[in-house]
Length: 483
View: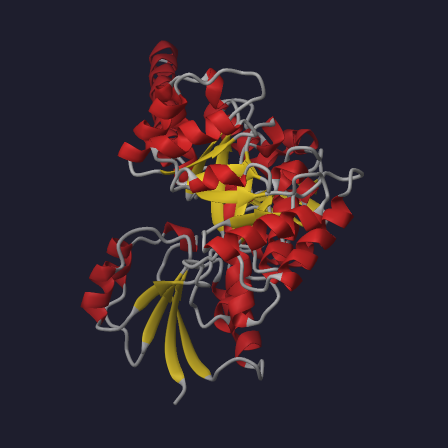
């Protein structure tokens, strides 16, 4: 039986909403549904609130579900109680309704993953225990499962044991990365969970402590030596993780990926680790794309863990990106689908659908505006700013300024400057722009602080009130003087 949907919208979006819904309804891939649109008397749909809806919408009729604009804020439970049907938000942009229906309105499930993230604190010997804990907490928030303490050659780490114990008290899983067997023994006796990196020559350390060893080749690129270490652990029934070592670009990257493939083929069931920092840290490229590609390989090879570093300024979000990438790839593999449509967390610089309105559609909307408030939209052609006095388009905000007539309105000029700058950046990078919303930068997107915007709006209203009062006083003085 076709579902009856009630869409609530504002005056400006009503026509566009009907057009999009008709297209969706006529798509044979869309499950059948009936719909009704109710315009509830606001010009902009985003200005709706649950309280306003509750006052203006008396009943839901035969609707099985009510769909609100995605930018409508507030608690919807009061509306569900009032109308007795589910109430949910649609997409922020009504042009995304086809995708909304394609996924039946349910966000992809990214709650699961099967890759453990070891986040390395590479400068641990130089940090105090307090500072190490602070870094560990940040990495844990970003998605790390294990905190790795990196030891440096010939650099003393006198507080290593105390650091491991302090982290364990706080319930962190801890690994220690060193080629010095004294460091590894110290860490193991202090309670470390994992030891990086043991070879067939230093494997004896693993029998002295309870920590799980991460095995690497005794010689660079030597799979036979890694195989011997693996076989020794299997024979001794000792848990382990094997790492074939990922090399940087032009220093053996392709061959190292082949080594991982050979390792997995020879040992289908063992746990494997890949250190991704040799690519994210040592390549001057945005780490979002690098992590996406690496985690695709990691997913195909069923790799158990990654060692991620966040040292270079351009790799500052590498751990958080790894967390998103592992969830995306797990979900895509589970669903037997391409890794598309699961998350925008790795789309830092571009969007898949940046321009949802054409210049022609924006022109049609602009003709409906009857008030002085400016609207800003972006199309493939550039920036569009309009109000009841007309529409102006361009690619440079400075070229638009003379048309705005805000010379004597500082607060309004400031607001338009901020929004037009955002719009220009979005247009240049092929990003989605929505007025009054932060641009989404993937994992680096900031949570929008609405208090400062509200404060600016209040200051603007106060400024206008003072100007109007002063004008009234001046007019009164002039009238008195003329009399």
